[in-house]
Length: 281
Image (tube, one colour):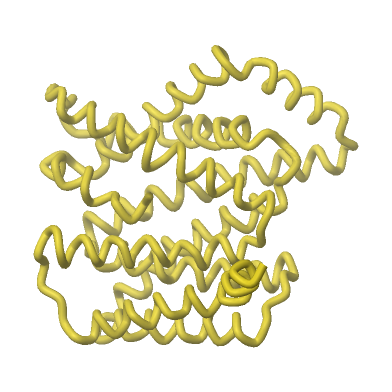
């Protein structure tokens, strides 16, 4: 879903990136709070009771994981916008490919998730693809690492934050993220948007490119390893690259084709065992 972001971002490209960020997060918070209090109040009360019944050390861990998750998510969004405005769009695209590598490594060292030799080969291929795409511009790679690391930390931290209702957890993260961003609104926001088109596309971004994919991300973490979730994120830049080539007719070179092809192969190799075992079953 994130791979199709450019389709809804292009029509409002004349607006400041910071405004898109602010209105995206604030509208998500309002929408999710409405859903929780109108339709999921029972789940909210169950989650509160579940938290109260935890032992003190588990309570502290849960609080830290959820506050930390909100900070990582906010840092990811803020760094993404900063790099897009002040560095380059290419660096933000590269971040989507650096993130799976960092997620896999963090999951291996922190969560002790096991990787097969084939999966390590896939990680190696992904690294090779990223190096090809960052060739001749190490600055892009540096900023991509910052963006990718913040989201990798979010994924790994939420892998340990299992057991609670996924929608309630995500609501907490986004609401807290809004509160973190609120003090920056006055200093970094541009004029108040008046076009109806802006709010339509912000609504689409909020629902289909923020709430639903983030919910699916957290839901996936309840059943599969964070390294697998991270590696599947490589699908996003491949879709974005295809759209840039065939829909927006942007210029591409042989190095980019080879780099993206290697990364696509790495996704297949990393998940090859599950794909082919499922086919046999």
